[in-house]
Length: 280
Image (cartoon, rainbow, N blue to C red; front, side, top):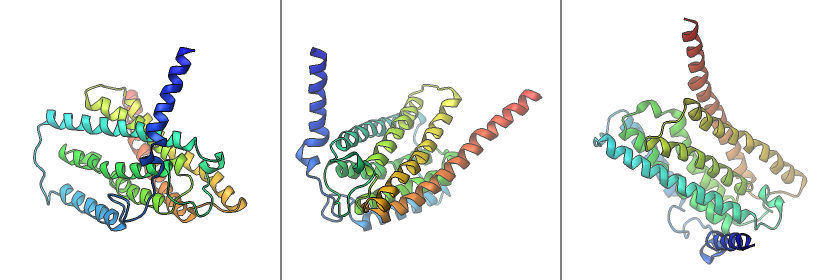
C-alpha cells in the first residue's frame, strides 16, 4: 500500500511539473509575441544560415578550429546526454499532457478552430526549440572532420524538421500528440546509443542497424496514424491543421525513402560483402 501511495504522489508531482503548472498549462503560441524563435523570419534565417555555413565548412571555404579528440569526445558526450535527457522529458511531458485531452479522438484529430494552446503545444514548442539545438549535431561532425557522416539525409532532415515543427505550431496540427511522443521516444533510443558510443561503450554492429530501423518504423507508423486522422477529417466533420498535415505527409514520405535508401546502402551492401568474403 505504501508503494502505491508513493507512486501516486510521484505521479501527481510529475503531472504538476510537466502539465499543470501555469507556465505550461496556460501556454499559447503566437508568432511574434511568444518568446524566442516564434517569428517566421527567425526560422527562415536559421535554415538558410545552417545550409550556407554547412556548405562553406564542408568545402573548406571556412575553417573550423582544431579541437583535441579527447575534448571533442567529451563535448559530444555532453551534447548527446543533453538531447537524451530532453527527449525523455518531452516524451513524458507530452504523453502526460495527452492523457488529459477531452477524448481519445483528440490524439488523432483536434476539432476545427483549435488554437495552439495548453500543455500539448507547450511541449510542441519545446520540441521545436530542441530541433534548433540539434543543428549542433552537424557542427560536431564537421569538427570531427568526418565528412562521411555528413550526408544529404542528415542535412535535409535537420533543416526541414525545423519547418515541420513551425508548421505544427502555426496550424495547430492534429496528430501532434502522437507524432511528438513517437519522435521523442525514438530520439531517446538514438541518443542513448550515441551517448554510450561517445563515452567509449562498444555495441555489436547490429545495434547501429537497429537504431536506423527504429527510425524507419517511426515513419511507417506515422502513415498508419494518418489513416485514422484522414478518416476523422473526412467522415467526422473535419480536423484542425489539414494543410500542415499535407506538408508533413510529403516530408515524412521523403524521409522514409531516404532512410530506406540509406539502410539498403549501409547494411545490405555490407551483408553482401561479408557473404562474398566467406565464399573466398
